[in-house]
Image (cartoon, rainbow, N blue to C red):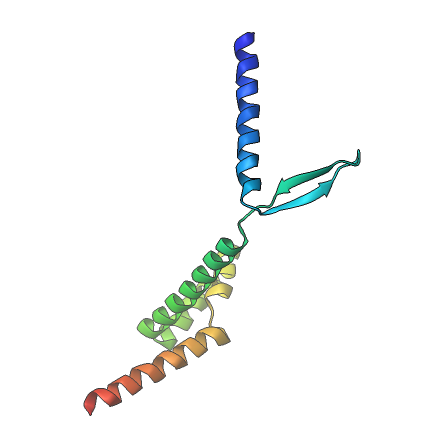
Length: 124
């Protein structure tokens, strides 16, 4: 019985030390409890990393789609997207994501301009 009491106490001490470390970083907010006591609570820190990760995934997906479009060609790419759209509901949703949109077209145009300009300057 005393062993389980010690485990609970050790867990409580661990939680208190963890909260103390989080509060010592200075990123906290104050909360007014129902009994009128103001309590400091650490803020969660996941905003910037999550947004950066999502932005990197989105940019990578658009560049991958532009590269796939370039390698397959317009006719083959559109035929495969149409084939996906005619499939199951999940495949139809994937086809909506994979279909060409203005951002991907802009990436294709920018890549084409960079490629052709680099070829022109390579001949000089």
